[in-house]
Each structure stands twice: as C-alpha cells, then as structure tokens.
Image 1 (cartoon, rainbow, N blue to C red):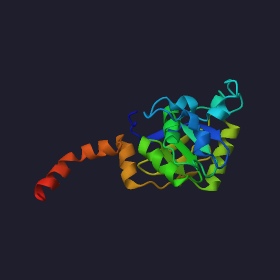
Image 2: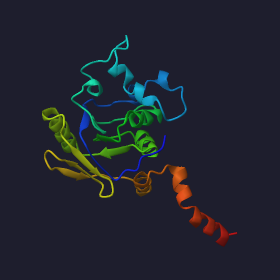
Image 3: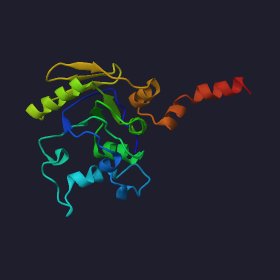
Image 4: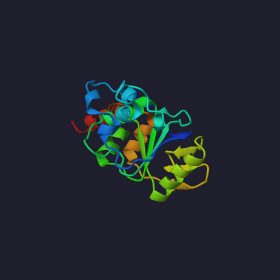
Length: 197
C-alpha cells in the first residue's frame, strides 16, 4: 500500500473517547493472517464495531453516520499492548490519516509513522476540547499542518505544536517509506561510495 503524501489536512473527526485502547482491540489477533498492508481496515475495531452475529453496533463511532473524516480522536494511552504493526495498517487502510491522543505507546507511534499514519500527541486540555467540539458539532473541523507541526481546533481556534522526528516528517511530506527515501538519495549514496572506495 503506497504512502500518501501529507502536508496539510483539514477534516472532521471520529471520536473514540476510550483510554488504554490496545492493539488487540484495534485489530484482533485472528485477523493477522495477511502480510500485505491491505484489507485490514475492514476489521478495524472489529469486536467493538460488530456484535457476535456480525451486525454493526449502531452507537459505535465508526458506525455512526454523523461522524466521519480522516482524523481519529482517541483517549489517553492509545495503541498500547503487543507490538503488532497491523494495528497501524488497519487504521490507515480504513482511510484515517491522523490519530490524535494525549499519549501513544512508543511502538504503535513508530509503526504508524512507518505506514504513513500521523500520530499527533496533544495536551490533555487540547484533547478534552477536541472531544467537546465534536460532541457539540460532529462536523467540527481540525487542521493538521505537518510542515509547521501544528494542530488547530477550528471551532475554538486553539492550536498546539506537536513533536515528530525530522526524518519521519520528511518521509510523510514526500510520501516515502524507508526504501523510497533511500532511492531519493541514491545519487548522494553513489557519490559517497565513489569517494570512499
């Protein structure tokens, strides 16, 4: 699955106001048979989205038609648990491009960045304001500006800076995975090899 270039995104959001969401809740282990990064979105939050008979759970945010967009606003400590990269793949494959939370598990954050999903860590106050804005108006908009490393709640005007590794930032802006990045600097690599042989 190619990584989409990311610079700025303005979108409404899906609220998942649950803390300590682990990777098994994001994508249950029984769906980890494939090795390609496609098809996992169908089973994102499978055990919360569907009942035991496979019927959609109407009040789960991803099933609620009033919510949409490319941003998931999640509770504190998102992506904890086992280190399955499929969790990030499932979120990206579903069509979400940003996850906003006040804390991420380190391994999940790295897996997300590796597949083109941007984890945006915000303060507890900003997160509460984001949930409140969506509760009042499900079409509330948020702007993520990756070059400036800012997220803005367009309902309140509140804005915060977020941190991201410089290398991963460059990869996201250009739509690169690690191999694409190496290909992009191939002339410099070849030049270095010629000088040091």
